[in-house]
Length: 426
Image (tube, rainbow, N blue to C red):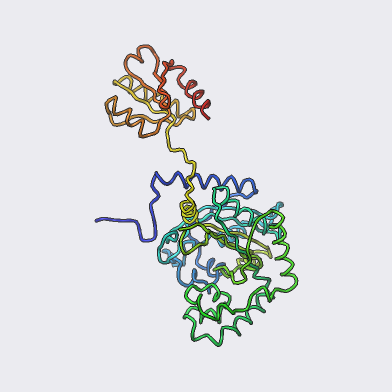
């Protein structure tokens, strides 16, 4: 039986995982500088969390979740996104009681959505996300936007577009909702089946429909910006002012809505303008969600966050021709001849590894020449040669593979010698 990975999933093989590790390290360091701390939540949660936290009217809840019953009859769901889980943990562990507010979190992890697999969209995909919980300061919105843009820029991306909108507060959204219902109702029968339901449940989601995006009514739909009350207008203006002061470029799109029900006020997406990136240009998105903590049983707590797909990030890097500086060679490779030399190589390989040197040796009992070929394939900077003659002299021959120069080194001094040579190259 030929068993393959399930459709919409992928194996990340050793020749690619170096890029993933590099990106994760860079993003972790960026979060450290912005004072965000890592959180790790379960891969599956109670289904109700996403029904309440993401929203019953969303495509995620209605069509895309992997939901199952455990042996106790409980309905569980593989997490389709990270915010609901992070907020659930925030509430469950009473992080709102910490002295330092806002609580600033980041996470990496696999997410699961049942949708048609295509380039950059998998059924299991990896997200990096951040959440800032406990402040309604527009400066926090600007900080989140700055971190998101920095994440891409520090990895070398330049063809970026930040798209911004305000969804307003509850009053503004209710007024806009009524206007949308009035606008789309005459066209109800012309809309897709999903949008006919959305018209009753959450008409804002019609603006995000892929099927009806070219319907004439979409172009003339009332803008949320027209219905912002004074408080919402001032909030949006302050966010934009902070971005202007930081020199972060953006464009305003009044039709930008997010695919989750919990957003209000600031909403945004970052897109790639790189040639050849693909028809779906969105790299990441996020926004403010001031009612989500209360919805999940916590006290009134404002929040904002965003999430990015690492798969789409890697696609954007490829589209811009950016190669990550991932070191894939060894510091050192042992070549040994003879049984006693083989035993010594095992010992000194271990000693070097304990000292922090990246080292490997031959485990196939290959000939001398074949071992050197293995060292070349491993892109080793140095080769340590051990034979019967070297052992009799209590030495090893160390060859610099870049220059071809070699030197006999006492075995007692081998570790110190290698560390010194490698430090000189850095």
